[in-house]
Length: 435
Picture 1: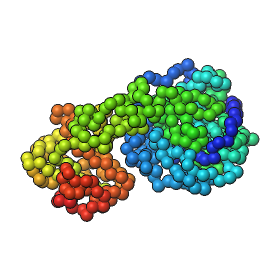
Picture 2: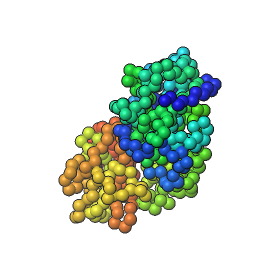
Picture 3: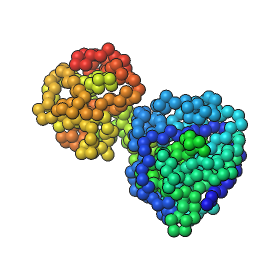
């Protein structure tokens, strides 16, 4: 059954953004026919891309992060683009609103979806829904196109568009998950409302046209592109069959709401020092998940991370104080360390063994490995963040460093050596000695 509604709107969008999906599909926890009366959870967001959106590092579950686009340009996103500028949205999904579309082209995209059912409009009372939009200037023949939450497109989890299905320029098409009791609907799959999964649209030849990592929490009401067809994905109001609207209450709207501790420039008056985890100065920010971002915060520690390189994965620590420091029980990790960090579930951390000390003005080289005093996490060539902290009297950040793509391929070091040095890429490697 093809239960779609076509709507038309003025053509003001002449570009397209294809979200490159990362990660793997997860099994549905939501049935195809979701109770539409179920409202979005008011609990704090517990899902989202696997990566830490907002740290400028491209990680699993992210299409982009800040200035890191994975080397992609407009033409890589869709061959219909003839140029322009591709950027990354706050949700770490690609935004092609600055890309230029070739004349007389169709641009069919995934545009809006919900994992908790449609609450209003012509589809009120139905289950999960996915909206497609043609943001181009030419009608598209969708005959034989496929839509699934499994990238392998198994028959039992794939909707195949019937022969003759089309989508005109400026039109929207809404597909509803099939109700398990009445068998009314289109999609033989539901949208996961608790985890992250990939929804993929492919053409009749099986070529991926568009895909999105669906954040189950954000999709409880609506997860949509802003602007339609070309923008990054955001938490939205439900507008199935019409132009998208940013949610009045959503992470990314610049206002602290519900379980958020920050949003955009609104930090609720918090500062680096106010976090009370070892920082004494610097600039606090907010991530795309409305969590504090402390990468620009600093400490007054004389013992610092001093040099590292992502080829051999060596990390050098320097004690710039005039006394020996006992590192026993201290932790070195490349995981995000904040109020949500749990050392018990960090599977790739170095806990310094008992008796580990570092004398005044001495260097300690930490090598990659699984042995005592070695770090097991490695250093990413595309960028990484390393944090050294002490848990003897609560979590206390000693020092941290974040580097970007290829900055540590040779050596990323402080110049001059020690706590007053400025982090510099492409240093002459001097692991174990002064920079």
